[in-house]
Structure formats: structure tokens, C-alpha cells
Length: 104
Image (cartoon, rainbow, N blue to C red; front, side):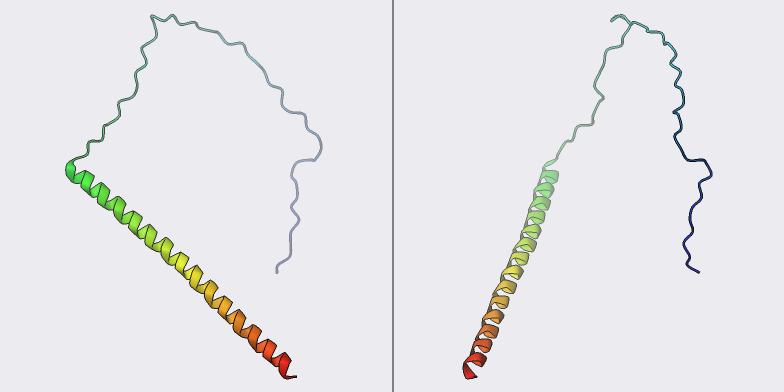
């Protein structure tokens, strides 16, 4: 049912020469500066902020900073609490092992 199939190559293997590229000469057209149109920058719409928009932007930025800060602080506290609990467990296990050796 699940037997691998060996792919067959429809074309022969071996070295093949790359196709010959035919280079055709092209005509070079020189433009004089009088015939060229002046280049202008594309018009971009300007952003105008109203006082309400500025307040909303500042409030949104403050909210993002507070949320990201709270998440980072909670992650730091999680790592610190986990490290402290692992070290306490290691001390308890070490003391249990050392008292077992002393009793024998």
C-alpha cells in the first residue's frame, strides 16, 4: 500500500549545451534636455491632526506602553518566583539526602 515509487526521467540525462543567445543590435536614441518633461514628486496627502486626534493618539500610546509594561513585569515576576521555588526545593532535597547519609 505504501510503497515508494522511483521517479522516471522523461528526458535523457547528461550534459546539455545552453541555448545559443542571439544578440540583436538596438538603436540608441539621444534625448535633448528640451524634450524631457520636468520630473515632479508625486503628491502625497498631508496628515492633519486635530486636538482630539492628538489626545486619542497620546492615550492609545500610553495604553499600549502600560499593557506591554504589565506583561513584561509579570513575566519577570514569574521567572523570579519559579527560580526561588526551585532553589528552595533543591535545598530541601539536599538536606533530606544529607540526613539519610548521617543516619546510616
